[in-house]
Image (tube, rainbow, N blue to C red):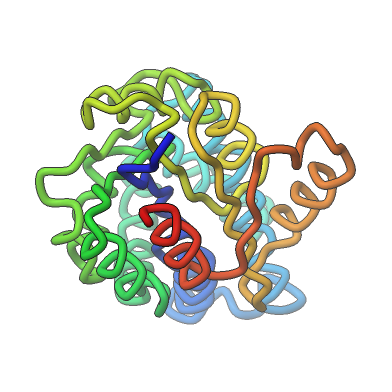
Length: 257
């Protein structure tokens, strides 16, 4: 069946989350006087990413709200950086995380291939949308800030915080398809995680694309996940791997005939 719309993940697909996270925590070390708290900046970045992954999963599992996972990350990071210090109260943790967010927002960037690909797909008559394991309140401003918001005006932007279930649940993909008034087989999905995005959208009946950016910003966790998924023929069946969003355009536009 002909593809009539394309849904995208946001973080590390359209938006360089990993790069912004690295820049932000590195700047935070300097402004908070924590440069000597870790053997190297890379060690601090690694810890921060591990804490983000763990606490964000608790948010996705419904254990924490979106703001609560932020405070949990700040507390855990400072507990390591300032060994033996008293645990921060909510107000102090919130202030610390707010300062981190200022650095993070300064580093917001879309990937260079994002706007050209979105423009080409829209020009070819394909409708666009978002399915993200995040909060709508965080993703809409982010897309506007990095210059991509206009591509999704009036488009479905379905986020797990509002939907009530995260990827890879089929229901979140189907919710976006329902907003488009299209059957899942008429919709493509593009994301940077093979398991959650590639396999999840495939199993929900969409045409699945795994964006595997082989750049210095790729995290060890993502690489390990991808390697594990690739070990299984069942995992890769029905998931098309691409190295950039530029590759997506001819693949989908050719299908339009």
